[in-house]
Length: 420
Ligand code: NIG
Ligand code: FE
Image (cartoon, rainbow, N blue to C red; front, side, top):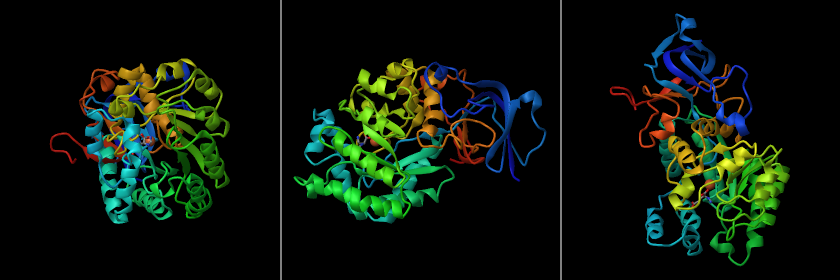
């Protein structure tokens, strides 16, 4: 039984003796911290932790944390990290004054990515996505959700979802797959949207569910994309195949999608740059996780998510990267946590809870990931010596994930002389 012992941890962050499923409201600012600690993992799972005065004296492998902080790995519950090509020309077009919506209306945006993806082989997609997965492993991510939605044909959506399955086989972190056929109306269905909706519901969904290629269903509910009524149809169709919903809502407009998703038992509602009082009210008492993606408004120069209003209403909040080629070409969760603090008014403790435990909850992994608790996967990272927890979002330009571990094994070591 291989064991790993970490000694000399200055502060062990989010170690729980009574694991919680998620954290909401005022509890989000109460981050468990254990100073001068050790941490033991066995067989890839956390086995014990406590003060250095009680540190066991032997293990198969002993690692000196060198006075660094140890955090549970980030749980990134919303990404689109399978894609064929970057879109920096649109980035330049936005600098020149075009909006994300205008670019989409001209056939750029998601449709640009769909054209490129359809031309790209499954193997090429797998290799490029694997590069991004390795990148986020080294940035401290230890669980990830990945969406389809750049295929928009039966064959290409299947291809994307198979790539996600291929990624599962290559990484030690849990990966969840979401079917996002309803990401944009493909050009061949212009003027015939009902045909595409039927394709999603009657052909794509049964095939994808039948092959076990997706855990969840998603839709981009937004003006110019899919309506609330259509989104309701997708959620209900997904439910018939046992797929819960994680839905893109309120990125640019509050259309009523939040209460509609909550009523239909969505696992999460994601984006929420715009949130009305009625949206916030509808989330109270529900099991739906509001998931904020502040890197998207950062990149698109949009208003930031009202995290304070959500947390002050007693709600939980999760943070995710939204890693994708159009609105967020970054999977760096430490930066997401910084933005949540700087731009959304979250306290560092709230943002860390949101990017770990609540992110895990938003992809039903809270029993496996999201905190340091006996029995959970030994996915964590070690920082260099830092003065406090608040230093992590404060030092937004520094990469403070010095050593990253998945299932008790090192996957990145950025110290001089370490593996990278
Ligand atoms: O979450 N908003 C919809 N989907 C992605 C962006 C997709 C794209 O532009 O390629 C998002 O921001
Ligand atoms: Fe997204």
